[in-house]
Length: 221
Image 1: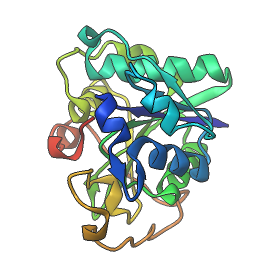
Image 2: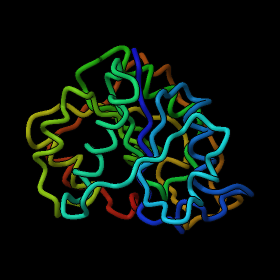
Image 3: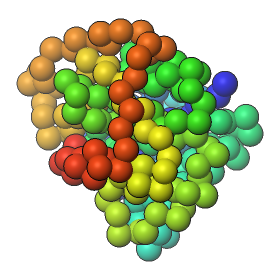
C-alpha cells in the first residue's frame, strides 16, 4: 500500500511563509514523511527556486501547477498523477491545501491506516466532528476528480465526489491542525487530543447532504 501526500500551495510566497520557525511547505513535507506518506509532491509555482530550496534534503519534489483554468479539483488530480508518475504503485493521495500547515504526522498515519481497512473510500480527518484536511482520495477516483467543475472550491470538491456516490469516511483524529490553518498561530491552537480510537475502528460515513454543509473556511491554499 503506497499513499502519497499532495501539498497544494496557491502561491510561492505562501509556500515559504514561516510556520513555527521553518518554511510552511517544509514543515508539511516533514510531517508527511514522518506520517508515512510516499511519494511527497508539492504542487507550487517556483519562479525563483525558493520552494525547492525550502525542500532541499527532504523527500518532497516540486511540481509546477496545472493550468489555473482547471480549478482546485484539476490541481488535485494533477498532483495525484504526478505522484503516480513518481511511484507507479501509488494507490491513494492525501490532498492537502497549503494553508493547513499544522497537521500532525499522527493524523496522516491515521488516514493511511484507515485506507488500509477500506481501499475504496475517501477518508477525511475530523477534529471534534468538524471535517478537516488532508483528504485521502484513492487513485481509482482520479477520473471522477477530474470531472468536478473547475469553479468548485476545495470543500465543494469533496462534496461533489460524495454527491456522485463516492463514499466518504470521516475519522476523528483529535488534531486541531486539520481544521485550523495558517491564520492561527501554532501557540494558539487548541491542545492535540489524539485519535479517540484506532483508525481501523468504527468510522462515521456521510454523504452528499453532510458534505454540502462543509465549512469553506477550513480550506485554502
